[in-house]
Amino acid sequence: MKKIGKKIVKKNKFFIFFFLYIFLLKKKIKKILKIMFFFYFFPFFLFFVGLAGIFLSRQHIILLLIALEIMLLSVNLLIVLGAIFFDHFSAQIYSFFILNIAASESAIGLAILIIYYRLKGGISVNLLTLLKS
Image (tube, rainbow, N blue to C red; front, side):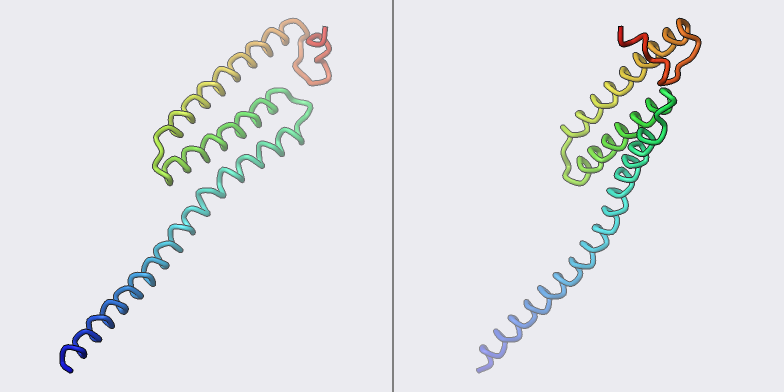
């Protein structure tokens, strides 16, 4: 009978430690999810700020380019955070290529705007009839 009692105590200790581990793991997971929620909320907020900038500033081309850059950087930040969380190095390389494409896009766009300003004397969206022909 003593052996049976010891087995029951060992099983109870195992279940106590198992449930304690699950309880602590739940607390840790909740903490991680709170941190993830903050870090994943920020890129979505930046993306919607850029989207609002595109829809609200239709008269200024430079503000449209800035809003587009904010949107690209927010997507890039989301990819980097996902790469860190899931431990993928390839996503970080992909985000590096997105940054290169965004930089070249803004450089070419600003060069076109400088040439257009020299020809027309303004860079408003209403003056963009020269690019159509």
